[in-house]
Length: 197
Image (tube, rainbow, N blue to C red):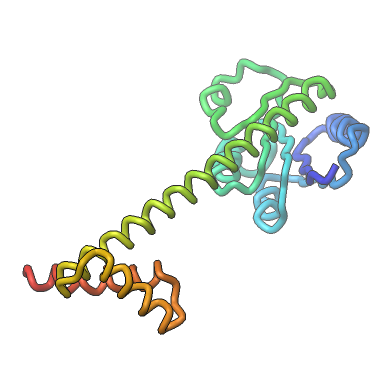
């Protein structure tokens, strides 16, 4: 598989076990870091799909580090590992952790959660893109409508004449219709707001 994995584990036996689990599942790109600063710097410069981290990983506060990585979307799936599920400080901050597993590390604890999280995140990314596209289309349509109505008002044109006016200028200056609409909207709205002052 083509996922990149970062291991931020302290115990050598956990590192070996995690590496063994991932390699047996076909994961090849596995990196080990030694503290949270190295982790953040590595994630800032490289695409990281999966992070497996001890909750008490050294140097900087683990939850702050995980929150930063999640907020900046530097890691797709964050897996926190600990001896004890009941750590109150972690349970209160699980919003930055995708999967929480207890030791000892086992394939049945890691792999299904990873697959589910990747599927969920891919669906969320697709929904975010669809939402952004719909929002952009709505905004573009709204500005086009404003530009047409501003032209109708300022130049005493019909709606069809105003639309044709926009199309002609867009063609004449080799511009996108939306770009011309935004210019008209911006200039006429500024002029209108200045005239009211």
